[in-house]
Length: 273
Image (cartoon, rainbow, N blue to C red; front, side, top):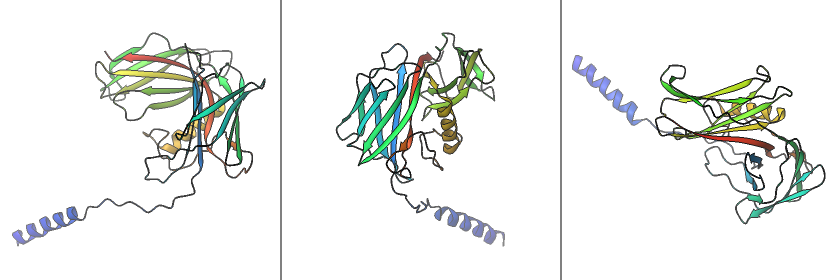
């Protein structure tokens, strides 16, 4: 009887293993929508003249390729009516400008004309403090004390309300690590931010970027992070849709995804010791 019982248990195990199968749910795919990636980044120490805007469309849940969009006319205009044209590298959906002039506090308007429809957005170029030269490393950091942790600082401007976007690129992360932060509880103080990972080792190079962002973009990005889910990059496939500040002036309901943002950027590299 014991042998028969053992045989039945083993047989059931093999049956369950043989039935293991990856199932892809047949999800309905909505009509593709335009995605406008209009992130103007002015890295400190550069002129900020070279800028790019990318156009693509949404795609199916399981697709890893986002179709590019060609044939658009794109300009950014200042309040004084100075016009900067973005010209496509043919067939790439990537539109470039080589003479853009970023000014902190200046208001800019984006205009994209595509297939007879006009998309617009208005935003202000936001400044950002420097990242302090003092970066601290703790080899027993993280919640469990088993991670290599770095801490960096930046000085908040106490005369205004500020919002920041942090981006960390490391060799141990598949996607950049993002965090949006405000100065509500740190007005005018020396602010600090952390990054840690147990896989970091001596010689690994970390790239830190700190962006000045508007309150409106801060709110948008936090929703984007929430939609992407904990532990996922904000630009991966998200379970929900988050609309930005771009409006279709021709057909309001045919909106585009994406955001028009202008940021001064502080960048610093750090090598793990």
